[in-house]
Length: 145
Image (cartoon, rainbow, N blue to C red; front, side):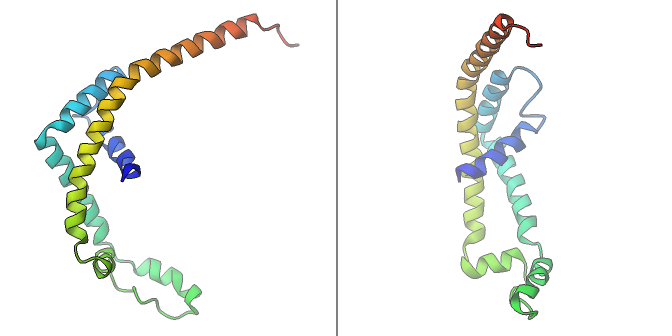
């Protein structure tokens, strides 16, 4: 589930209403606040659900056809099915789980954004100090010829 949060944060950061081109820490803080709002959670979870729904409706014919040579040229059993049909054969409750998971995913992304808002100023400060140290070290190096 954690690895799934990264694309959600990237999606949210690319959403104009949730992130802007100003300072990173303030952006993360605003994003964390925005993601606590139930209306935002519903909207983002709805968008994720719609994307997943479109994925679930994809036919797997092309994949099945590509696998036929490895199956001795015989048709693959999943041919003609959608991702949804294959997933529901293994778990009839898959759609309900995906819907619940989408909302939890958005909430988790908000918690991660809040943590990043706290850490970002320290990380930016550490990077600035490291850059200054590199500049000083470079200034003290003899010129190589």
